[in-house]
Image (tube, rainbow, N blue to C red; front, side, top):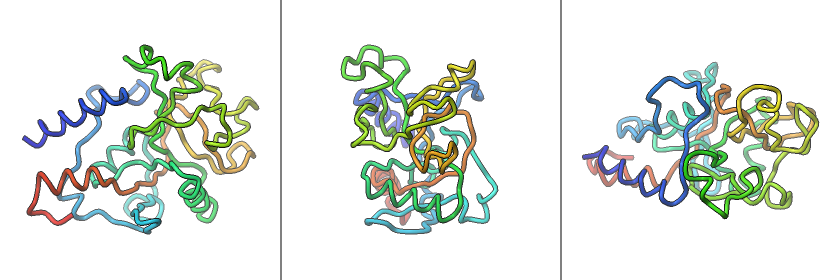
Length: 225
């Protein structure tokens, strides 16, 4: 029953804004995982900011030396009623960036993703994709156009000295850069958003998901989350 409810919810999400998966190669059968009630009840929160709880992988001894790819991080967070961060406001974005600088963390994944999979090509509002096709998967909200530098935090440079997103790795014969990471002066350009191929492994930050917490409370009323 729980998976049936979750499946219905995922279908609804896809109808709202087609959701995708990380770049292949990936092990066959990887999916977006549902929350695990017992893990939700035991989730660790390192800090609260503007009423929302955050988990920083490098602050926990059990994950300090771990890194995961984009989908792996989303699933790790989701199993605990959290999700990969979606810095939707400049205040939240600056809060996260300061953590990277203070803790000397080189980069992290966000939930940001390019909508370049089946169904996206039919969306007129997403064209051109490299400008209008980015969204926060955890919130199913579109980002401002990449050309509007006042409404986003894309870096001004990168590995090929072009403004972000630049799809550098694909241009150089590798994977498409379909996922959004925050890089800490990696290209001597400050702390900004960069498009990165989704299979790369990085530390992570989870933020509490009200939707997942409410889902677990509804389906498991006897578990305190």
